[in-house]
Image 1 (cartoon, rainbow, N blue to C red):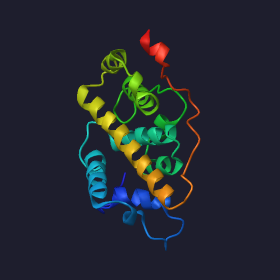
Image 2: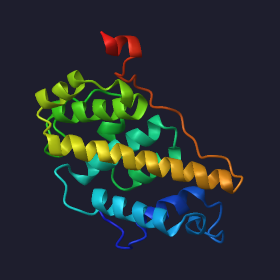
Image 3: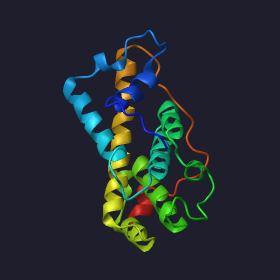
Image 4: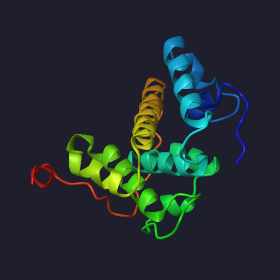
Length: 188
């Protein structure tokens, strides 16, 4: 998997999503320097540093977040960066993925589903399921941060598109059902 060496990669995501033509001014003018710096730092921390989860898995989980949040262009960005299609597919994970067991990857995808769709309903039982699948605390924190960052990116895209009077880039939700619960299920 290749990485763009530019320090502006997070900005390029926004530009790629929001520009109608190569001649149009990029989204950088729409963002404050503080937001830009924070976005760059978060992107670098997730995707440019050594992580306990391989990049194709991280990008696939990020694509799942983007799909659930209806951001087709953001999901496409992560797919183009090498997201493993086995993780973004509707099928259950049945075999090892990039050195991670099927149970681990399935648990991570389920965790991403929960945090993307109903984070307030996440319970201790959900965390126990992650531990039972062999997912340690550093990986849970990493993936939780990934969901938060991708949510941040989606909100930036929405904000900049709205300020420009452009339609918000959208996509259909994934075809697989999520394992999230309703508030009544969570209370049980």
